[in-house]
Amino acid sequence: NRRARFYTLTTAGKKQLGVEESRTARVAVLRERKMAPRLLAIVGVMPLTANCAASITSQPIPVPDHALEFFIAHIRSNVTRDIAALRPPPVGPAAVRQVLSALPSDGALQPTADEARALAALGPILRFHERDDVIVIKVIDLPQAVIGLHARAVLLISRPALGILTIPELQAVVAHEIGHEFFWEEYLRLRERPERRSRQQMELRCDGIAVVTLVALDLDPARLVPALRKLTRFNEQLGAMAEAEYYPSLKERTEFIRALSQHVDSMASSTRTARAR
Image (cartoon, rainbow, N blue to C red; front, top):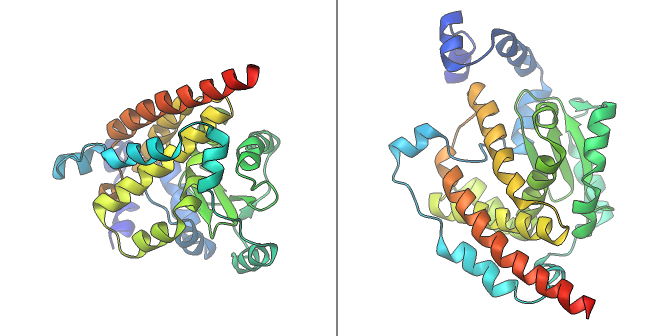
């Protein structure tokens, strides 16, 4: 078992991979808990960007033009109005209750005071997408640094993710996760039957939803890039980087985020100027 071998590495091997022995021991304990496999399956733990090993063994794919063209075609005059036209209706209260009742009974954590302050900063993101009364946020007990939208109803955030991300970075990643709801059927299909190019294109479009969201709220969309880097590096140290080839490289995402930010910012500036008149 590959995962089992990872946790039986010699001390020298752990240092070579850059994994602290204390962290490895903590991961091993958490994985033994019954809730860990279920939570991992629910969140769908995967890397947020392709790692170095993946880029060596696969031919780099340029930033898909149609990902940028999608937003150029749909974000044309008023950022808030145009993104609202793309946004799907929210799930109903009954569906949210059903999703919550199906979650593992253990594994949820009580946020610390610092974590609660960070989670409170997600309010503007959820309100912008009219999800503040829909999506429930839960801090979960996992060794990986992960953030995932489950069943369009629950935002699952692991404690390590809260620990390594700044508030602007957390806002950026959550805006990306909300982006999955815009392409939910495609997202589910690609999780069941992964297609490399299609998955990369979809992830870029979710980045695009994050960019639109952050620019509309006068937040910095560039914060998504260091957030992705931090999450990827943290999970690389735990060996939790399966399916990295299905994600765009950090370089591709950086270029896409920069290009789309310029377009959306120009649209937002035009909207603000029109309002001032």
